[in-house]
Image (cartoon, rainbow, N blue to C red; front, side, top):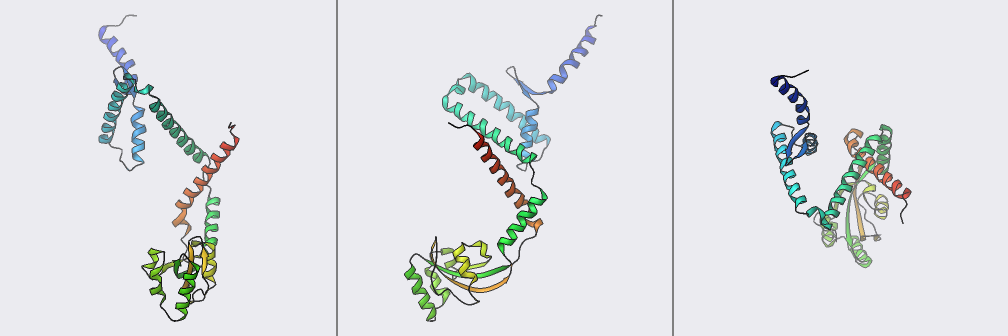
Length: 257
């Protein structure tokens, strides 16, 4: 069978077009696959960019520019530089690790039962009461005792709070606002919940931050957010826990010399 020139041209175009369609461009004989545009656009979409023809045109030009520069870098021998090799390997590792973790989370999704259990646990730890509490924080126990003596003598808590180490609350008379016991370190919480409204601690409360004089202003029923309000936050936390556990298991199984 023989082809006429016009017929032969049609056949050649039919063969060549699909192969060309797979490439974004060919730079100095090296093809840039079109799939690379999709990958970069998808990455930009996660950062809030809209997939538009204008964006794809910009990405296409950026990929061509990159290919030109990479070829020049390779031609100049920069790719053989030990520092560059190390940085390339670190970048490769980071990419692979990130892909591994994404794949693990996809194959091990957080279940509704796990979300509910974590929510119930957080709610129980928070307790059913909130406390409006004030404090004065100092370095020395004797200073705290002196403050307590002044309070017993009728001094105003808000005035004495100006000397507190906790500058944030000191500017507000020692006010720590409404909070649950779980918000504070154990020693502070235990002293706080033992107080009646209007009372202050008559002995200094020692924590890792120093010595506290605590005053309880009021108590109310705790306002805990609904599951729907914190669901995304819980899922994120549980995913991080799963990934951390997975990493630990892999490291323990590895033969490290």
